[in-house]
Image: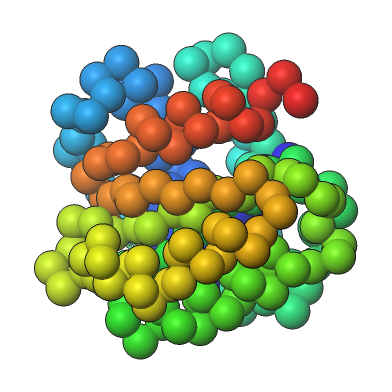
Length: 178
Ligand SMILES: Nc1nc2c(ncn2[C@@H]2O[C@H](COP(=O)(O)OP(=O)(O)O)[C@@H](O)[C@H]2O)c(=O)[nH]1
Ligand SMILES: [Mg+2]
């Protein structure tokens, strides 16, 4: 099971919806762009979705609402991978998101060595953090050097689809056959 964590409104539900309907995104790669914008409603509790990548393998993704932070750890023991979603257009939320990520990474309850993907979402928004700002405000290189789990990051827009093919590739490499 891949856990999908992150603050309320960071885009977890939309991201999971995109992954659920992803085959075309894979074929079109970087040039892919979604034309629709599915509505999401705030997730109450948790949202369980089975995602098939390339119409082949299925992985269960469990989104846990941002306000459920205190109970995230109840789900840690079943996780085989974690996606941590950050809204890079919400400057006020970035510091809190970073601290919450550090808490997740340091959690004893999370199986050791499971892969973690930081998804910097909403690259389509004006006023988003630049790559440099992400690096400094999020202390990316510090986090990576202190984390003993495989940790990667990808910038995406769950709205336009930009970068989604990279998330799918990460899932193929990290969520299957393990
Ligand atoms: N512009 C833009 N809006 C997004 C993106 N991802 C999510 N949203 C919007 O952000 C809001 C919260 O998204 P949602 O998936 O419900 O967030 P969640 O609380 O983390 O599950 C919704 O209005 C989404 O349409 C994105 O990449 N770009
Ligand atoms: Mg949600």
